Image (cartoon, rainbow, N blue to C red; front, side):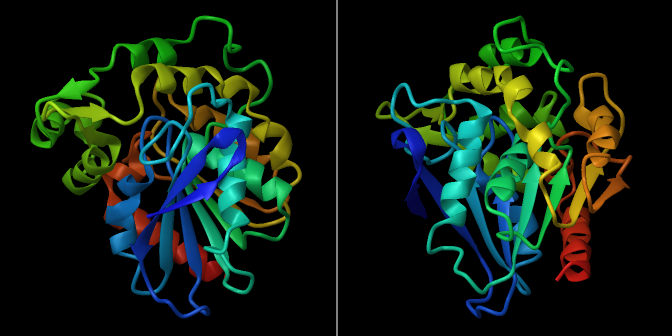
Length: 286
């Protein structure tokens, strides 16, 4: 794990998920959803790293990133975090780079790609939260996702207890067991009293959810000049599936793929199917 300086005094954690050291091998940069961490992509990366170098970042307030008190949690700052990784020596100048993202992580990669044209060969985005102005509640108004996040349980007696709790009830009961274990390993930290605690506290998760409406990613979509896959699962009451068709119209080279057997946590529900989809997309856009 490496820490990369970002804005606001943040140091972004980047995890090496394996793959060839050869500079000719494409590099996949994995980007996580709100409340998660880069390590949740481990089960997907394990099926891709024979052909691709795989790395994943933890956004500010998430995972193992070093986030000082008061650091901004707005989505444009998540774009700063992704951009800081693009500008680091982890990426290099010659290796083909493809962005792989889920939910909020998709918006962050779009922001970074718009700021650094030519950095990515392509983007593969699963249900990115990228919406037109006025669709989501503004940051100062009631937000059901933020209110739900504030009710999350913060501590457990052990990693095993945390995993068992999530496996037994929605929404994380839909996660593949390997993805759930990866989330618990990366998303919790041991406390001095022997218990484990969320690295991304409920207040941080709620603050990030409140910022979705003002991300700037909608405007950034139109600036992209690269292939972009928008991948969606089944229609759900509060899911971002409905955002994708309109977002597609903003892209100069976009493609929409449906995976109706999956929900919003699709990459974490079906790592094998997700790895196949990503591999096919990367090969088609290398």
